[in-house]
Length: 459
Picture (cartoon, one colour):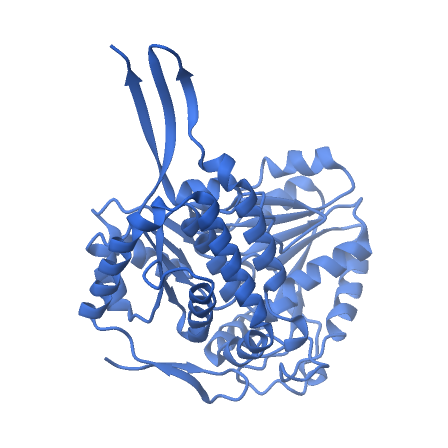
């Protein structure tokens, strides 16, 4: 099998290399997971919860190593300290609601009938995780899947090969059996072969639209449930009554944090005409305050993109937009670390419209276009003019107005005065090309379990 190489965006060297499993070895891993599932599910729920929380605690003990490895693998500056806040919060919440969510829902319990709905684990859960938030996106499914009594096989992105290994190391050290949670390295062909063979009770994939289509194709005819989060082109809308400074700070951070490599990052902004000039001025100043550089430098607030080919997509979108009349407001010379490769200067574009790819196709990089709008109607139409629907951020001081606008936006999450955030108590979901399915909240447990009805009659 051809080795899979992890090329570090920091310096372009091969940071890690792993040989993918052969088809036979992959099938053996699935067989072990299936054999381990019933005994794991037979353990008391409280025991499974305790083991999962212990696994996350062991991961926290690796913080220094994990933060350094993340910088080498995908370029996030070490000053931001990894993903532990979100990992811990999501684990704690899903653990807290597990007993109530998974408990049978009793319809009748009398001297004649006992009728109830139960939740049963689906069996083996297959997680295909992305590189941009490699721990958080994995935990979203890993934690509820294990708690609910499933076994899990994790295939991580080639850009973050070491993440799966660290998770497995931590969870195994906490006492979770090796066959209950397996980290594997697979090529695309073997991945598709396993799915087509109906190896899994649920497949969760986070990645590109093309990748999601490949998953659906592989699963065709197997009736395997799929959870697909396929990215976004998330909008921010700044109404006339918005708190301008708060809007600038949050939306620009949402556009630039993690070098813009976030599924729910802000990629396009619509500003009411009364605030437009002031918003643009403050946004440009905000971006000029960033420091692009080596992620190990304490001064760096913006690291390289995860791969130079990802940066090329963004550069091409920017160049095409400028050629079509867009105006760039950031001089790349202000960011001398821009090397034409993975290190990419941030950019703010005005005079943009929806004929430009930078306003309609996912950029997944440190660029944002800003458009002027005259009212809510225009903003809603523009926000909905997208093949994606993950989140939308509305800036206003009126709850009712935000909720009313939210009912008209084709999106999975509506934010008011917030952006680029996951609340574990709320369902993480999307529509259109963003995919289907859900994670987090009590519905996250529904994804990794199936309903089972009991109709028991005394004669």
